[in-house]
Image (tube, rainbow, N blue to C red; front, side, top):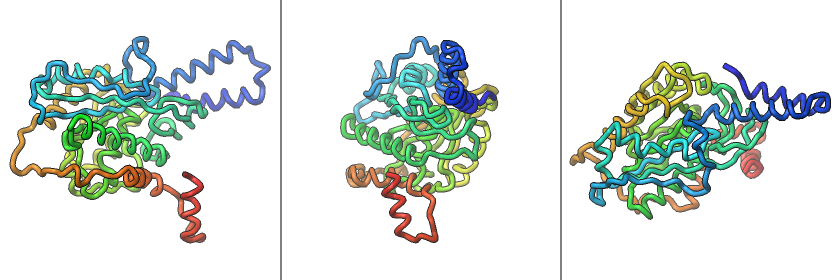
Length: 343
């Protein structure tokens, strides 16, 4: 696999030491090509010429042929990959009902939020659309996590879930949270890791070529594990988010009681060009959202559980705080000081 991060670092070093010894147009061209390659490394392989810049607003789509009653609403929140935009996955609203026709009978709101522009360490600190920073390339099971960035993205997801309840009347128990690559890492974290006790479980979670971050601090409640099934698809030849990430993540979550549906394919880091994978995802979504209600299903009182903005802020930062190094010799005061200095 070509390590774009390493090659970019080499270019930056040349730029600092001997820039005037290079042919300037050639240097600029090389840098731009390398940045473009890395920017596309984690994004969905849709024809980029048709992709629009990321909007600051949520990209919300709805089934055009809704036949479902108002009490049968659902939502799918899908997070794009690093360097991508909401448009990279906006066709899910057409693809999923095509492969799973029963979905066309539901009142589904599709939400494709845009990531913020963040500095990516492995790309020489260049600003890109991303959910959090990336420190290693490729991303294997020993990759370093950006816990603070993950926490902030989880907070954004929870804000969207609250908006869906307040504005669309859709409970979290009817929301599927998913994502591709870096977006998948956020989705699986938000769906399972350290959710507040008593919080409403999501209807399901979808990870496409993603990974399970913050595994050292993974804490999945029995209630969440039982209520939120997981679909995880991955390319066996993925040289960006290594295939070992699926093997590890699936085994770990399965051991904690999560109902996992796992598929792998003889492809690389791609999903939107792998129609078998899209079809498998559609069948999972259909199973989750179209299953028959029965008397054993747990009913949730959303209004009694929903977090205040202050509590949501504290919970989102928990992932970050768990990863802070503790100087045992300095005592509690040093830990509190680390908290104040890093936020």
